[in-house]
Image (cartoon, rainbow, N blue to C red):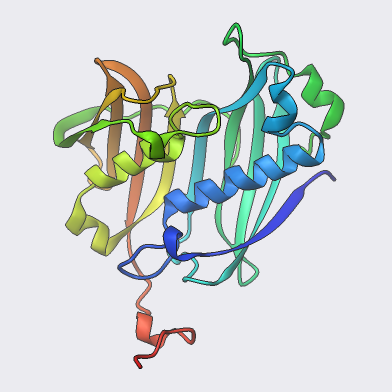
Length: 261
C-alpha cells in the first residue's frame, strides 16, 4: 500500500461564518496541501521540480460531501494516493475523515507541465517514484459532463490581484471556486449544502486578467453550472449539486463553543 495521510484542524479562515463548519472550498485546499506534502516525500514537490523546468497543475476535481462537515477546530484526517497513471494523466483518489467517519471523498487529475514548452510531460518519472494503489473512492475516472443550462442566475466580474496568485504566478484554482461560491444563490445556501462539486480547469490566467463568472440554473433545481471566462474563452467549468440540510445542531450545542465574557 502507498497511501499518504495527514491531519489538519479546521481553522477560522476555512469555516463558514454562518454555522462554523468547514467550507467545501477549504476541503479542496487541504487536499491540495496533502498532495503537495505527499510529492515532497518523493522529492517531487514544486521546489524539487523548479530546477528541472517542471511544475504541477491540477486539471480536475470531483468530490462528494456528507451533510455534516467538521466544526471549527475539529481535527480532520486526509488519506490520498495515486490510483491511476495514463501516458500524461496522474489520478489521485482521497478520503477525508473526522470522528473516524468519511465526510468527503473523491478524485483529482494532475499533470506535470514543462515550464518552457507548457506541454504535459509523460508520467514515467511519477511511475518510477510512486506506487499505484488501485482503489477508487467514487468510481471510474472519467471526464464529467456539464448538464444543459437554462437561464442565467447571476454574473460577476473580477480582476485578478496579487492575492489570487500561487507560487507559479498563475491564478490559484481556489480563486475560481470562490467566484462560483459568490454567485451561488444566497438564501438557497442557508438551507442547502453542497453534495457534489465538480471542477475542470481549462486554461491558466494571470495578474490583472479580468474574469467573468456566470452561474446558470439547470433542469435539476438542485444543480447549478458556473462558467468562468476571460474574453469569452473558457477558463474553468464548475458544477455544484446541492441537498437540503438535515443537520439540526446549533452552534450553542457544540462543546467547544466560545462563551461570552
